[in-house]
Length: 417
Image 1 (cartoon, rainbow, N blue to C red):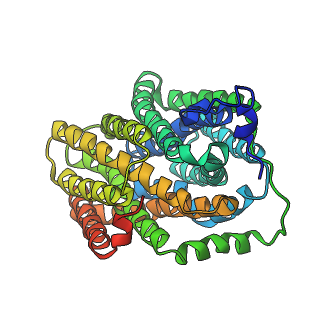
Image 2 (cartoon, helix red, strand yellow; image 1 turned 90 degrees about the vertical axis):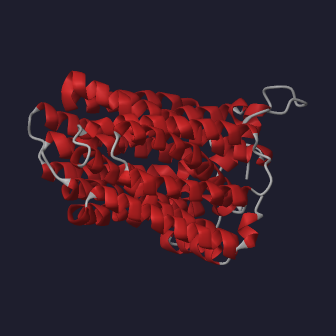
Image 3 (cartoon, rainbow, N blue to C red; image 1 turned 120 degrees about the horizontal axis):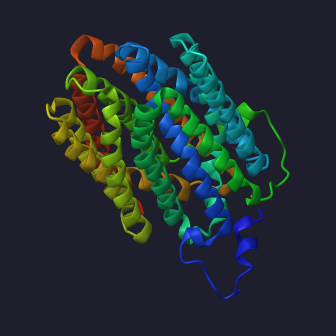
């Protein structure tokens, strides 16, 4: 397979080697596009929860359902989208998925301006938003190891995590400020602007040429990724921990905590923006560290210990009665989360053949994003029975038990480089 990054590198001296992934022009273009796109993706999840809870007067269950509808298309589409990423032009797939998301955000803005946006419309638009994102996400992840040399893979993954966390830092607070100034119309107008800006960056992106191969049904190709993962004990455990984090920790922190802020701390649910912002600062710090120290030994063990720390912090978050204490806990959670995000994805990609990278990344995103809304739906129901704080703590406890078991029972994972 030809490497688009190699073509760009030929513009410089043949003796000159890129020192980091951003030195590769096409990776840099993808990174900038991801920064803007992820801004909208993070803004969507936060804005929909805020809109349902405060704009439409909904409760924890209706909030959980809205987030569920946003993420459920991932469960049905992302594996096929991953197979598609291995057989079609990556740039074209990025453009189409991003244009689809833009259409959904514009429709939401129009309905808001006409005062016609009901909870039913929110659920419908959430589904279409999820469909657009499900088609675009696998190719974004699969292109990373194809655009950079192998020695820069962990650096590139850490930079991508930094883009995600930077967008998280900016999105929730900016959405909150924009909403306070211009109501929810301003929130979605901001997303329209960011998507248009992101589309402009894609014009010069060159993606690797797809080799001709025998084409099978998309579902058959997607199944090959599952067989690859099942056949490798390292990948089985890494995906197990990813699934556990998605269903428990991620769903609790990203969704149920917003209900805790409103119901138990008696604050505007939009104040969740500040918690997400400080968490993203913490993720950025450790992402930069991993970016600079990508050749660390025994990354698997460090990844597991970071998940243990994060799970313990989630237990504490559920019982916290002070917003200031939550700010500190979310920052520490971000420090642990930076290791988890970068090392989990980097270890999975480093053990996956490039010719099936899109399919494996489809499975990765299915687990990461497809399971979280399922968890959110269940946690929303549980929160209405025993309170959101208790649900958050229980999720942290379950996650801590599972990751501790894998740490003690699978030494091959602890020693994974």
